[in-house]
Length: 302
Image 1: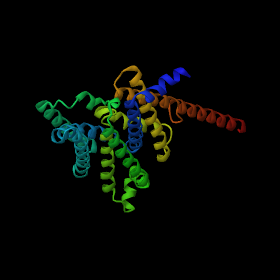
Image 2 (image 1 turned 60 degrees about the vertical axis):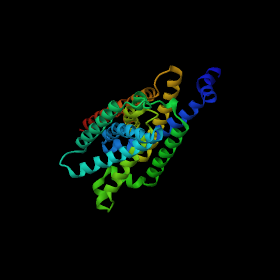
Image 3 (image 1 turned 30 degrees about the horizontal axis):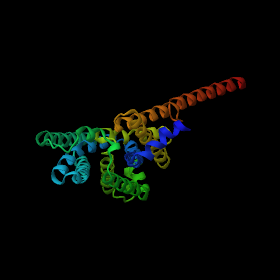
Image 4 (image 1 turned 90 degrees about the horizontal axis):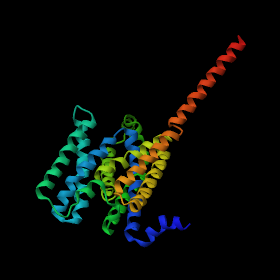
């Protein structure tokens, strides 16, 4: 009991930054996990990667224009604009979406790095921007993260049926009169908000993992979107909280710690889930036994 208190309770009770970090990590973990299901179902995992790289430009420009307050605003504006640009180019170009993403995110990321190398602002820690620092979350960061994450989750909940139909069968959605382009732009905005919310927690590079791994793990458990989102949220929450404690006790960067726990969760699910390696192997053996039994019965009848 003493060990459990020292590991789990004392850090939160004694340090205010752990309290803020725990809330921020939980919000980001659940928010990214819910959106990751839609990305996995639609096969658009690269979209989160594209937006996260583009956010660096917003961070730099926002900081130069408004200081610390401008980081969040600039990141959100650039993220949304990049997402909308990707959707627009994809709809009006003769190539697939991954090509549009590759072009736009490399250009915006390079532009952000170029400005950063020229200006070299002292207030931006590039390591924390890229890989996160959840233990350094301020009250302002916590408020912005909580509000943006809450709005994203609320929007997904209210528009769940529309997102579900759009994700699984966009042609049917259009045939039913749904404005799929509006839904796509809305989803891009939600994804942008989630990426910006995760900026302080896991950073721009590792947020891609939180937008893919929980949804991929959930897809190994169930194919029903509502259940997939619940499982994914559980994976995201577990990875965020466990990774945060690991970051505190082992003195490692919070972003990598959270992603490593998420990766471990995926490995366990990949092996032991009903749709995982063992589940597939067991079903295959049962089918083999069933076929042999049917063949033997047919032979006896003959």
